[in-house]
Amino acid sequence: MAPIIGVLGMQGDIREHVEFLKNMDVGVTIVKLPKHLETIDALIIPGGESTTIWKLMKITGLDVSLKEKIEQGLPVYGTCAGMIVLAKEIENFPAQETLGAIDIKVKRNAFGRQVDSFEADLEIKYIDGKPFRGVFIRAPLITSYGKDVEILSEYDGKPVMARQKNILVSSFHPELTNDSRVHEFFLKMV
Ligand code: GLN
View (cartoon, helix red, strand yellow):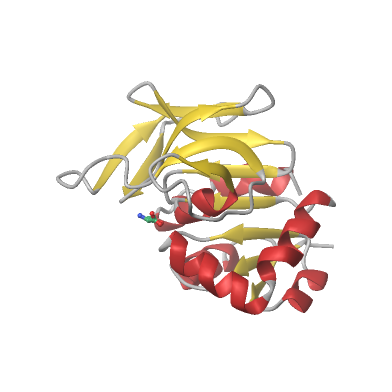
């Protein structure tokens, strides 16, 4: 049976992820409340504004219930703000709360103002063929990581995609391309 992929429906590019997944061989549902976690096989945390996403997660109780689900092994993929929400530490906003699910330190808006948004061709480990077009929008960067974290892609010598057990993160937005290889890679983790 096709897996059911949840998209965390707090704030951000929720619809883009849902539309993208509709073209794949999966079921899709939006997760707005803790009880919705019971119906999914994996979760995507979209890009958006990480403090807003977190605030809404706290209001709904998803901060606690998702943490539990992740500890039980739920596969989760965070893009951009989703990566920030999953990170253990935020270098330039140390007081910002997160799920702390992956042992990485990130820097928000790491690419500076002039280059808030850009695209770049990326080599991604385990993804063959032509380079992957990475879309970066006020993107975060991984500035340090623990020994259990595997770096899957770098831009300009800096890590922009990583995995640790059931957690996958990327600084960029594959849902804004026509290329499903990163989503397919995540589905293999499900
Ligand atoms: N700049 C946003 C943040 O820090 C992330 C941007 C994005 O998700 N595209 O939360």
